Length: 178
Ligand code: PRP
Image (cartoon, rainbow, N blue to C red; front, side):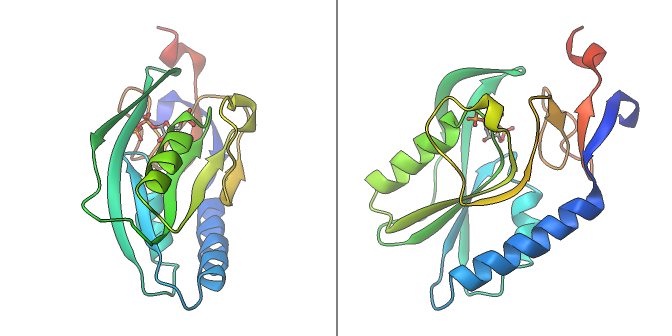
């Protein structure tokens, strides 16, 4: 698996720094509140799990499974495969995801949560790829910026593989041009 990686984009050490920083920011911003963290499967893991360890707040969590990708190209289709078990009405929500790319997924999720009566909805992403943006949406908490390269690892996949890499890496072209 490691042989398929051209270069490391965000190292394990950098990810640890990001988790510490975002954990502190969210803990400070949500003092006195009990946010609901909503992770978007499957890419939110392990980021969601590791981030929560850095949050010093009473909080709850839930997950949705929303898909918008086929292969490496965004299809623009957003499908809810698994919905929340939690009523979001009146809740302060932090949506957690691995990457904000075209923004189609997160904008659809934000609209849905607002329509269901969420009090506030903030977005926390490990990676932001601004060059990919199609929908008018930005994240409130961002781990790192990535250029317009196909990155995998730490939750991000290519055809369901590489999610278990402990860092973010760039795939060699020959892996996805076969
Ligand atoms: C990926 C990623 C984000 C979304 C970002 O999910 O986890 O949710 O695409 O892309 P966008 O900004 O262009 O909408 P995907 O649908 O591939 O599912 P996964 O989390 O199971 O990998």
